[in-house]
Image (cartoon, rainbow, N blue to C red; front, top):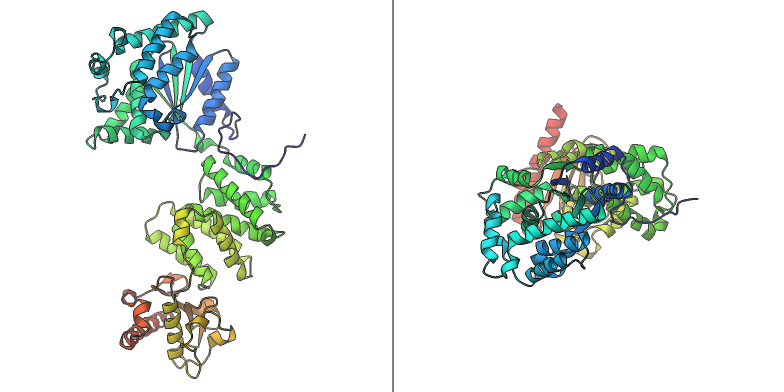
Length: 552
């Protein structure tokens, strides 16, 4: 039977091993079966790495072999302000899962727990960091509030007895309790849960498996006890509660198979990527951008699938265009600032595209960003895709398409409206550098509508400069040719949407003089003295660049 195609992925955990980590799942399950209780195991990993899926898979194995297990999702209980009583809710529900409510002792215990739910026990102001004092502190805190049988020590003893009776009656050797989504709570609340677990639920018959992010717990300890609690103390707190750490084996995920299977399962409109394309371009684009987090991969593929369904006509039977669109979505998610740089560059017809890529990579390195090698590898693939498409209009269309799935913050940053002051000054520069040819500055509404042939002039009487060319589109940049007739042999100078100057640039490298940054376009438009000073500084820089290039 053929598997039905889908157009999206859910974020739900799965009981299937999609990453080829069966030996880890089996090994953890066997360890839980054979270990001595009490024991607490932490399944550690960042959000979206598959902690819950691992728990599901382990639980399935244990249940098939007759081991009693209970699953508790703290995130569900944290809604509707229930997280204030989350520790007590946890004990209450675990007790109901373990034993029959018909038993008199269980009914009394549940009644005592229920009474705790109606009282606001202020755990947050207790000195929990001293684990040996927790029981005494809690007892002192509540001894004047609750009836005689409601003190904390009595509750702990009663709970342990309920567990023992349940195991005896149902003929189980141990109970495995899975507690999920602790790291989705406020960090200090997650710490509180761990503290209460240690206090109430340390039963010799129970194994606790907690899905948790180690860093969240360390942060929670610091938030709760102040900045004087350093990382070492946070680690000591964690180690005190957790006997066995198990880190999600993301490094051993067969991520290539996961990506391949995901793409093949998606009903991507008109997309026919062969195995070679997936292996040589798609998988590296993902790895070098968003990485190997399964949740991030699903989000990326969902966004791409949405775009293909919206822009079906624009991508139909154009595999290279689909690949470029996919790369742009990857870049948008992983390298937001560099994506914005590329948007501005290509929409304004920045210098030759290899130079654009080269310049963005250099700037990325200069800014001291992480993952420089990954970014450079990503940009090399993107450059290859760009070089395979000679249609200049493709880029504008693809950027417009990719912005459909951008985040709110990115949308706010992406302002591609022309800056009239920049347009005015660029044309004024063009006019000053040519003889007998130029643009009218009297009708700014016509800026950006000039014909291609009117944007080029060979009538330049400046030494070593052979030609000028205004950029297409908005016309917020100018090419200054001095090596030949190819744009790759030209200096590029432009302004951005906000009236700031970029360049001069040569071979994708920004060689801007710092003095040029002191001349905003809005001040140059009507101030002749300032424009002349700006022009003089720009010509000095251009001459310096040409002289240096000639010597090399």
